[in-house]
Length: 119
Image (tube, rainbow, N blue to C red; front, side, top):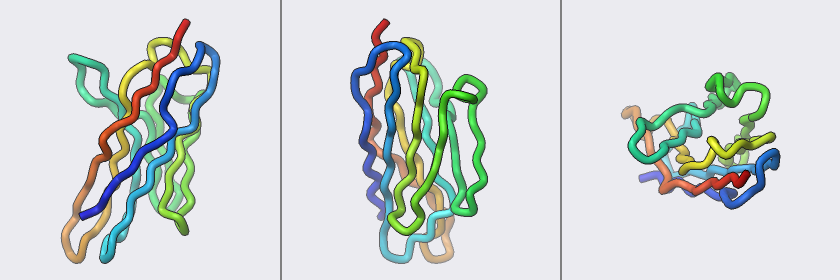
């Protein structure tokens, strides 16, 4: 089992910045990608940004130019820096860690961290 721990959410004014962190590791677990997602009430969970252990990244259109995903592979931590935050960015952000546990492909989710942007 991989425990995924998120941190960095909080309350920020419109135009401000936050850095979210996601840590996840376990014995025999070899991660190959970590993604940040968000889900507003009544809506589907959507990708914000994703990074592979090789450094390949992809971003949702709504965060391009405002967000940067990066990783510290030695520490198994992935960061999502979000700038110029908007009130519509307010929601819960979740981290998903994908990888291999033995021969099985698995993924694990964190509990989520709340981001609230005030106007």
